[in-house]
Amino acid sequence: MNLFELHNKPEELDHYDEMDVLQDQSKKIDADPGTQYHNVFGELNRADGPAYILPGRVQVWYKNGLRHRMDGPAKVFRRGMVEYWINGMQYANIIDYEVAGGDPYESI
Image 1 (cartoon, rainbow, N blue to C red):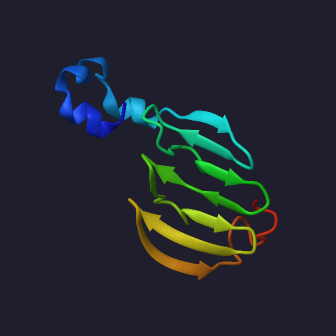
Image 2: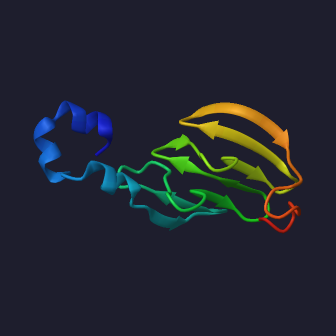
């Protein structure tokens, strides 16, 4: 059940006393070709790292289905390109060779 469905059925909210806690819990899914983390509503979500990882290519941070990261770029590509996103809004694309200690090839 997603948030829209819960909003339209308030009686269902009794099952979700701690909505924020539930949304922060992530379930790891090993998908072909990468790894994804989803919250209980099926949205890409992870509080302690990237929610979508495509080894050797890209790492993407999500919060409740939206690209989001406050302490760095939300999307990091293998060759040093990064994108900054907050709550699903993109703020910048930057070629950043200082990502993860200065070597973009070692960070992913």
